[in-house]
Length: 307
Ligand SMILES: [Mn+2]
Image (cartoon, helix red, strand yellow):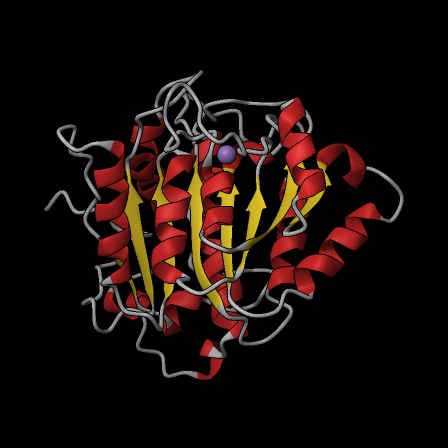
């Protein structure tokens, strides 16, 4: 057996045949509280073995129709500066095929701007789900810190729709008020009457290219205790499903890429399972929105004995 990572124990499709490319990025350079996010990509992918192929809510088995490939891990090279590392990541991801679902599995949140730059070179919208506003210009001496991705995404020219935020610095709030390109849904405000619906309405009406970044700390810590910087409050599982439903409610949504970041594996493995199932749900929704139901059954699941 090779050491190659797989999704749901399926063989990795050749690069030029894959509908979905998943890149494990065990990046951990600037973590500030609980360490361990470098171990997350492997832990999440190993947990996918425990998922079922059948999506009981959507009524289909996505991998009968879809081919997936888990790419080799994007390894950190400690001899590189932060700038060099992030430039190498962006260059590599830009070299991957365009017409696929690209998913980066982190690793710390600092990787998002490199992925967005590679997949969405023109101005688009980043749907940014996080407990923290991540808007510092620099943190502990680095603009490549996991506390800074939003500042770098704005510099790339993107609009940002942020939700779940419940830990924010005073100057970050002032920046949001000044910055017309950010639409902010504080977690606190989402509790208000009608606010959750307004948020879903915003998500379902996004135009143009979209990039989705999910910091696992957006979830309530009862759902995902294993994150680098946990915060009380946050999304429960079916709220996240509602966000995905809203995002994919427009058929053929121009989704350029997704990342799932900041998980820290923990003994109960509930966090890893939630991340694994979240990846499956994203793939299922994307596959449905792009009409893969009606495609021939030549997907990755058909390569294995699955019953
Ligand atoms: Mn974050």
